[in-house]
Length: 329
Image (tube, rainbow, N blue to C red):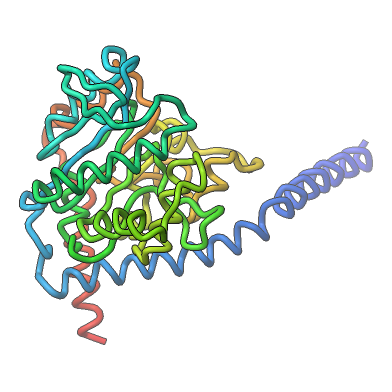
């Protein structure tokens, strides 16, 4: 009996090690390469946060002085089913908000000279940004585009933007990597243009440097940003966690076993973290949010507070500690 028992045990161990080797070989080369790239990018982002804090002991501008104009991509069919729920929840936190459609209504919506349909999304974006540049550019220094099924925490976005200069050509969001060499920002997660980036976008179409070459709105806008030398900003926090999200939270926060990566993970410019460390404490956005979820997220964001809880994430303290370490070295 003993030789059979030993043989069984050895076989079990060998089988486990073979399976482990197979899974590791499937993902290790890609992951190691991605992790090295991710760490370089994270350190670069950390340096940006640190340098901003060194200029001013806290932020370049107080977060509450950062003015954001929100413009919502919507249409006549979505006003009752989606858009009114944005208006009644997070839209109230924008400094100024516009609802861009193909028809003027008492909602109110802005009528753009475009037809509805996915094939016209980039035309709608072009017309919306031209309209904002002509009529509203002095009402804000940052311009947020969001869909009518996106949820945004404006205060967290203000915090990120307060460390940046709107007179520089900057472009923020969930950065994707295919098609455009410097990447582009996911349309669903929402993206932000500085005032100078808005000017350059409009100028690009005036001069012919930018064109409507694709119906894929976010990618096409990203190409214009690259052409007009608008710099993409790393919006991850100082711990390398994402703030903008192209999908709801459940797509990110649940830890996954090794598997072929879904497309939205493959598209990420930076290596994604799945599980509890996926997302920043200062989340800015989620996409594909149903109307009832808008109100749930609104409640969780602005009303739910555990008694006696001390916030675990204090980025200013991390930067301050890093500054002391650098001075000491």
